[in-house]
Each structure stands twice: as C-alpha cells, then as structure tokens.
Image 1 (tube, one colour):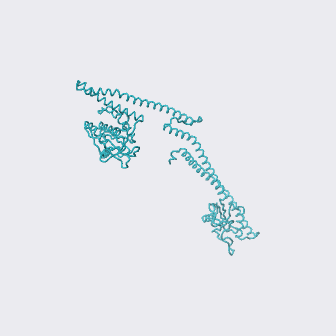
Image 2: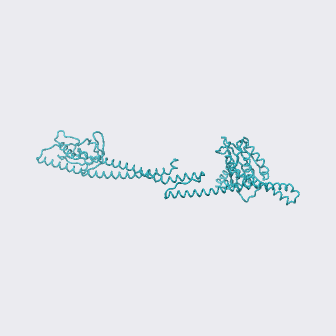
Image 3: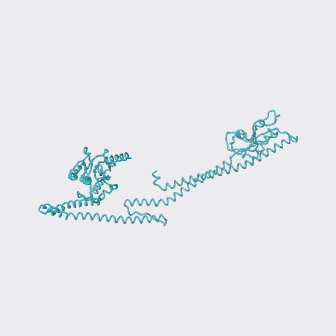
Length: 540
C-alpha cells in the first residue's frame, strides 16, 4: 500500500492494465457472442435445408414403394428392411456431418406390417449414437401431435457415454405400408465448436498481447514524465537539506526541459535570497552582539554615577530625588534588556552551552517562588506549589531552568489579575520525562496567541502597562533554554479563563520525552467547560 501511494508510475500502469483488460474482455464477449450466433444461424439454415431434402426423399421413396406394391410391378419389401434402406441411404451423404434416426410413432407403434409374425420394434440409426436417448420425449410427443417439421437444440449421446450438443430436426412420415414413423436428423456442433474455440483462443491471445502492449506503452510514456519529476523531488529534498548548489540536468527543448530550466532558475533565486538573508542575519546578530558589548562599558559608568546620585537623593529637592529613583529603576531595566539581548545573540550564534547536572527541581521551584512572593503579595495573590511531595529529579542546567521558571511565574503574576498562581511538578512513571506547569487565572489568551506568545517582543495587549519592567524577550529565551535541554515549552489559555505554561524536560541529557507527565489544558478548565455545556443543555 505504501508503494501504491508513493509510486504514480505503478498506479498509472496498473490502472491502464485493468482498464485494458476490462475493454478486451467486453469486446471478446461481444465478438464471441456474434460469432456464436452467426455459426448457429448458418448451422440452422444448412441443417434445415438438408433435413427438408431428406424428408422429401423419404416421402417419395414411400410413395414409390406403395405404388409398386399396389400395382404388383415390384417386389414387396418388408417395413424393417425398407426403413434400414431409407436410413442408410439418407445417412450415406452425411458421415461426420449429421446422423439419421428413425423412431417408432405412438400412432403406429409397430414397425412393419400386421401380418409380420414378429414385427420389429425400436429404432433405426447409422453411427455409434444412442438414438432413443438422443431425442427427448417432449420432441417425440410434439412430432406425433403435428405433422410439421420440428426443431430443437439437444444432446447427442454416444454408445461410449460421451455427449455432444446438436441441432435435432424431426418429422412424422408414412412408411412403405402407410404406417407412421418419426424420422430425425441430428446435426452435432463439432465443427462449430472447433471454430468457436479457435476464435476464442485467437481473441484471448490477441487480447493478452494487446493488454501487455498497452501496459508497456503506458510504462514507457509515464516513465518519460515521472523520471524528471522524481529527479526534481530528489533535488528539492537536497535543497531543503541545505545543499543549495544542486541543480537538475536539462536536455532537449520540450515541456519537461522547460520545467527543469524553471526549476533550476527557482533554485538559483532561492540560493541567492537565502544567502542574502543569511548574510543579513549574520550582520544583525553581529550588530546586536557588538552593540550589547559596547554598551556595557558606558552603562557601567552610568550605573556608578546613578548609584552615587541615588545615595545622595536625600539632599535633593523632592522632584530631583524622584528623578534619581526613576533613573536607577530604568537603569535596572536597561541592564536586564542588555543581558537578554546578549543571551539571544548567544543562541543565534549557537554559542549557548548546557551545564547539566542531576537536580531536584523542587529546590529550583522553591527558590523561584520565594523570590517572586513579594511581587505576588503586592498584586494581592498567592503562589501555591503542588506536587512537591516526591522528588522530581532530572539532568538539567539549574541556572537556565531557574531563569525559565522565573519568567513563567513573573508573567503569571503580572497577568493573573491578583488571583493565585499554581505551580505543579510531576515526574513520568516511565522515568523519561519531568514537567513543571505554571497556572494563572487572569485574562488568559485568545485563540492563536498560544503560538505567538514565544515570539520576541510580542505582547498580548500592547496597551497594557508593565509593572515589573519586562523586556519582551523572557519567553523567547525560555523557549530557547527548553530546546537546549531537548525539552518543550508549551502554552494554553482561554479568554477570561487564565493560562497555563508547561515545561517538559527529559530526565537525562540527550533524551526525547514522548509525552508529558502533566496535561497542557488544566483539569479545572475541562470541568468548567463541562459545567457550561450542561447549563446550556439544561436551558434548552
């Protein structure tokens, strides 16, 4: 089935063979039927003419014998001998073509005259056939009822038990003494069956040859079209793998050649565009990295001056003291942004390294929660940790995981509308993965925002004021940290129902978790959805 789905050449060839076979079968049946009907009609006409001539001869011989007997000019012949002579005379010209049979009639059951002491009873025939079994009782009754000629398709039974289809023509006639008897011509279909078999064999051989020829033609034609397409698919796969110098071999000037030229032109343009984008990306990364490094020296100087001004703010006027506090807070935010930019540049340059060690994630979670509790209290909510009753151990970089959790927890507090934030931990039963989920009950996420929330500098509500001084890069850095561990960071949310971020990590470095120990959609959201569905159903 996989080969059938992937190989268009196989499908076309097999479909052509099946359709050709169906057409040949239909044409063969029609032709054989026409030939059969033609042979039967010719046989019927020939047999009818032959039988009518034989019946006329038998009638003439009976009249001549009766006249010779009445006038005394001829020697009287008994009925048995006369019938034998009639059958022998009529059958002499049709050896192998037809048989002649004389049977008794119920109208005159005895062959021969009444004066015969033992008149013969039964049949007269020439050849090795069972005359009485070859003629059906129904036909014999019909011949006795009507003196006209009767015709029927039947079976000739031979003495050795073999049977053969035949056309039987019979008529009731008077013998030399005026008694009634039945005379039959049996025309077997031996020659017709041989002719029909020859035609059928010829058609079958020609049909098979035609089907094979059509299959070969279809294979050759489709191969000429499919081969360049397969080549283009292989080249496209190599281009997708980064081998941008690959090109198709073009020969000729037909449609396939023009397709190859267009493909190569597209590949060249893509290579140029990708090279330009890569160069632009390198310049951008170098610019960000250089600017970030260059800013650290003046920023350090500004920091020292700001610290001095902040410490002496008590001697300033209220407006100047407030300016010193704002200057220090904005410097903190600027330093955080600069650190995030440097971290992003490391990820872009592939210079980020993992310093993994066996770590109980409960300790990391508790450190993050303790650091974020003052912010949660100012917001009016609490931080709740669940699932920390059993160890949750994995080989991770504690610094990076703590940074990921800090971003998730702070974002949850920021968007939690003063409600509690729940942090859950779990370890997989198969020992392959661990997970940490951060759940808030705030504004939530609209459809489609769960994928965009990890984009750099993306905000769900640009008009919403930040109170924690975020840089807009925290979730992007968290996603890169998760990927560096071989894990996955996912988001779920619904408008007004809050959001949940789930971090899934392998227990060992280099592992790939198949499934997360925690669900992405929290259980309380599913329960509320079920309650709403029940309420709607009850209202209806």
